[in-house]
Amino acid sequence: MLHAYLDESGIHDGAAACVIAGYFGGSGQWRKFEADWRNMLAHFNVPMGEFHAKDIFPKAKGFFHPSKWRGDHQGFLHAIAKIVARHKKIYPVSAAIIVDDFKSFSLDERRYMTGATFRSGKLVNSGCPGKPYFVPFQHTVIAICNYAPVGGQAHFFFGLDQQFARYAIEIFKQIKASDLQSPDGFGEFAWKQRLGEAFTPLAKETPQLQIADFLTNVTYHHILDAGDQLGKLQPSPLLQKCIQNQRSREDFFFSNEDNLRASLVGSIRFNQFLQEQAALSAQAGHDTDAHGEHLTPI
Image (cartoon, rainbow, N blue to C red; front, top):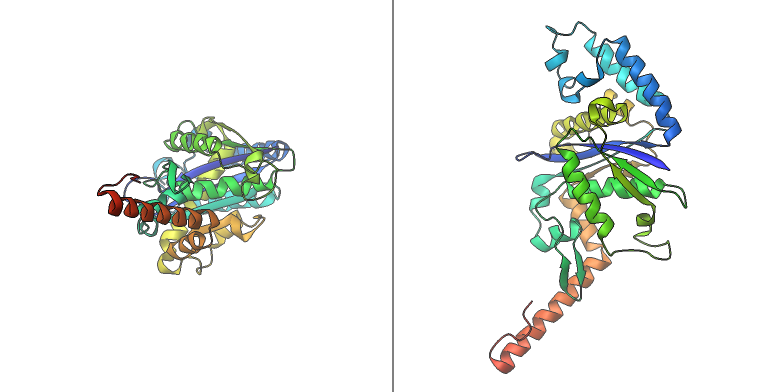
């Protein structure tokens, strides 16, 4: 079994980018991490319930403002990254999408990207074309499930005390309910056989979700800092430390207009839908010419 802990940054209105990120590993590895995490927080005099990545990076505020907390801010950041890097079998994964790039695509294209199912040129379900975060969410879920051992499963954890949990559970259920399957255990959707269950512990009581929160926040600011150089700008030393145990370059992935377009062009399913849709439109036009009205509206 793999246990994956995920968080988000940028699902709010007006966000330039959306990031879904976190870590995954076996339950035994997580127990070791949790003990180290609690010891680190105690060393820096930080109560677990006060740990919020946005208050730590890029600037100290809230509980960590110098007027409230007398700890070493830079030392604390270094300790967080160091403890993550030390646990070599706790693996990072993150995916992000540039919101304006996502919005530049047509409705049907965005539906396909966000889980729509097409059959015979028509929609079976509509996907989530208004929710760009579905794209990085699905990317991380697939990546993690592909790492689950044969016959095993990956279970997912989202913070109950965070807004993201409600959205995550909704999308998770939609992914599980999709009729897109690979019954023989091979092919494009083989990962779904390894998709486990979703759980919602309290983030303020769960070290695994706290480190997911930290990775998500640092990655989000990397995207903002990179701007047009996204994908070319090297991660900061802090972020590099947090992702140094990644198993593949695809586990630190950014979706922009270019690679989203490439995925559509290379998708057999989406191009088949376009062909079927065109055939239906042609048939509708033929029926209009013959009878003066649409007999087979799309």
